[in-house]
Amino acid sequence: MKQMLSLLILACIGTGLTSFAGAQARPFPGPDVQQIYQRLLPQIEKIPAFDHHAHPGFSDDPDVDAMAAPPDASEALRTRDDNPELIAAAKALFGYPYTDLSPEHAKWLVAKKAELKKQYPGTAYFNMILDKINTESSVANRAVMPDYLDPQRFPWVFFADSFMWPFNNERETARNPDEGVYIPLQEKMLRRWMQQENVSKLPAKFGDYLEFIVRVLADNRKKGGIAMKFEVAYFRPTTFSDPTREQADDIYQHYAAGGVPSEKDYRTFQDYIFRFLVNLGGRLSFPVHIHTAVGIGDYFNLSQSNIMNLESVLRDPRYRSTTFVMIHGGYPLEREAVWLAAMKNVYLDSSFGELAQYPAAFKDTLKMWLETFPDKITFGTDCFPYNEVLGAEESYWLGAESSRTALAAALAEMISENEITETRALELAHGYLHDNAVKLYGDKVH
Image (tube, rainbow, N blue to C red; front, top):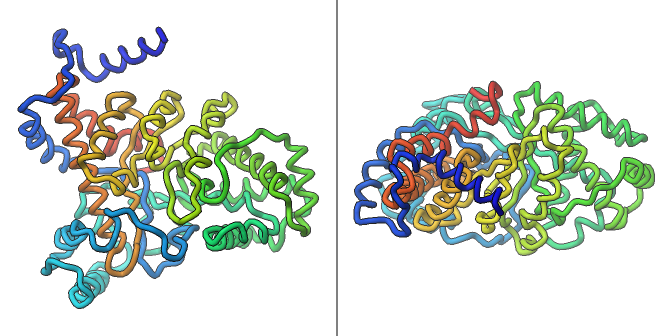
């Protein structure tokens, strides 16, 4: 407990409390909070952002993600088509002249985008979108990078889950309708990696399979990859045992040539592969991104995907050279998640939180994070091309606007409550929106 209090005291000193000459922090913001907010917001809007998590692309591009939404998946209120904020996005980005998104009016928006794609050919279109939302770079979580995204502004994060699913997946696919969508896409992703490495079938020996994985990661780095991403919470629990290589080897030898593995055997094999990839991330200087929030679909199990399940991996000294990014910050367990950032190699990404929540609620998340480990949190939009009307463009705008608005509100309260100065607030804003993530990747991003 003494050590924890010492950390908190140092954190407070680091955020500039000493500049208040001993002033006591207040439990409530004062009447000046709105004036402070109005001063901060224009300055925060001028900060070029580094979007740490997004899925940029066009709605007809099958390689945007290694996943897909199951049919009739429920949508949170703010990400539904009828959210009026999306009309504001269309107006800001494209000069949309209407006050609704009726099918007739939406045709105007689709036509306008088509016109701009011709006006801004190749990589120019999405570069223009980033310019409009004052975003310097946006990490592209994609199965494959297309030629219409500028690699200088869209660093690539590729998906690594498929290495955990090399066997007959009939039983896994049949578990529920969601897995009936997800698992075949992992099989497709693994075939893609095999084709990339000129591997026609699974290697006969486990050691050769591991070498195949190493080659994929090495080649993806040459292709511009800056990190690997796991969406494992969609497929199975995020509690990982620690099997030996011999155990994984035995299972591989049993099922590589055929047969349906039992759930116990498959989980044991996957646990080894996950830890192998985590360790490999440290060896190859590849940060490991892990989906740690709620998920779409009727069968996503929040209790089995609880971010705290990962603590035994994150705090394992064998992986101290691996950088972890907790994508979506564990939402809705973001209060617990921030304490994982006490580890020097663990960071939180706030994407999706700013879409699932309105700024009034999201500011409380940011405030709590900024008051705890402000140098370990990063901004992301989680943009996605939902359809040709509401595409990545509109979700980019919504994520960026929500985050900047909530950030200004959170910092205004912290200033009004005598926690930090305005100067320190702007330093924290630069860190969250840009500097923290850029420092994480060093010369891998521009």
